[in-house]
Image 1 (spheres, helix red, strand yellow):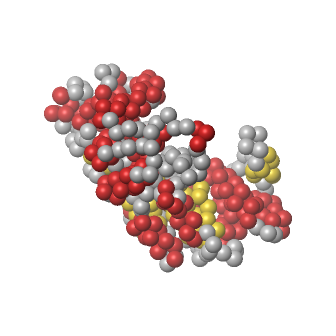
Image 2 (cartoon, one colour):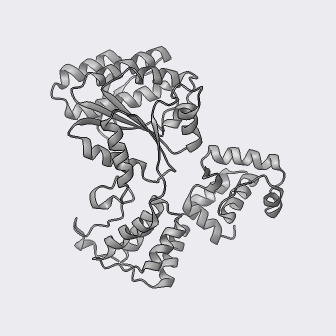
Image 3 (cartoon, helix red, strand yellow):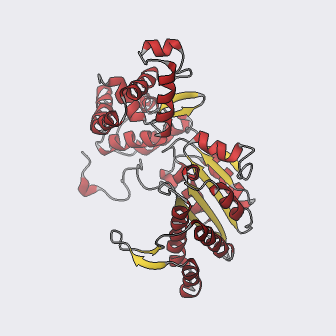
Length: 380
């Protein structure tokens, strides 16, 4: 076990699993970062699509680091929003929190915005930070407030870049005209750029690629795929070279393989190995991975309790196959005793909605890499 008394910034665990990684702890993504920066410089909006936990947030925040002297950058996660009013509330609080720290003329400009929104300032009981409170907002008022926020940002002296994370959430809003409302407000600006990021490929593509949608061709699409194996391998070996941890080239290949090249799971596995000064013994690396899966077992069992038998059996079957192209084929259904094609269709729809599975590269896969591997070793 690493000596806690010796830990300092020089020997901190380089495999970041929470927060955002930057500098030497940010693994490559140079091409994607350059593309985002080029789009910002040339006033092009970007739709950023990838699997969940593939590194979208770190990529965007690293872009913010590069341009923060020239632009006001806001990262806004709208996943909790259920309707347009929630969206506007989250948007307004993000603007208030950011400019409350950066505006010199705080009381002149920001207080004017708060007043125009009809909001009150309160203190969050948990964080102790000030936040805006709106109470019950009617849809018409939400549209008005959205327009007020956009106008406020448009008047900033510096350019503004806004990254909306999990943007596909707007498709679940109760209001059916949300896309048109947002598009109308976003297209009228000249001083604000947008990055729309999301983890649901199908929903994001329907938002920005469908002819009938308001956001059709309003931004360029950038897909964030796995980091090339040789680059990630160099990154891992480079960070353990001067540490007490030891990994062979073959063991790094094993990590990349069992984690399916997925950024978060690779980082987590390496973080664990680094924290125990892993000694390079072949049997031990498998044991560490099994320990991780066992620790997550209560979560996986809870999934079992949440799903129907047919959904669980379908999820397990997809995991055991690694990937599935034709889940309604007779061969697949009979092999795993999944009932009829209609049952499988319903199960696929439900599992996709809950993001238990993902349709990726024209194949169905289990979204959670650890759950995927747990199915492989479990007898449940």
